[in-house]
Image 1 (cartoon, rainbow, N blue to C red):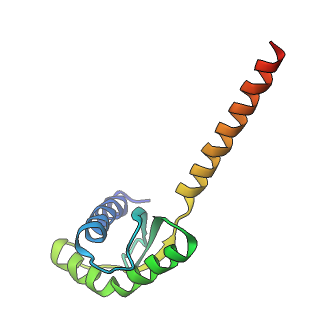
Image 2: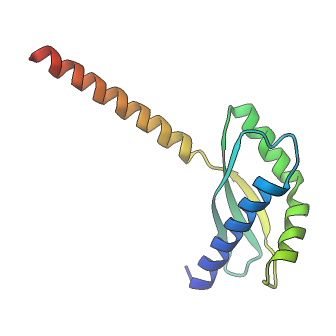
Length: 123
């Protein structure tokens, strides 16, 4: 990926995170909402925005709906904040990698406690 696209991805991630956490007042945006990654097309025509929401599945869907409805406001704000020629169209994607990582850590803790208990029985 070209350096320019990497820089724009990082800049968009930072600005989107700031807008979501500080400037959006939609009641559907409850819970912990995190922008985990932004991947722009090389021509900046569109960007995939990965969003992680620490909540139940129904709440995650409501958060994505709230973000979708705020995309016009978000693009307007980015147009005033950033010095780039084109603000991409955003496609929001629910990122479940944090939940998968949490599940994996829970499983590893369970396996570790089971192996500790089995070695304790052998002694």
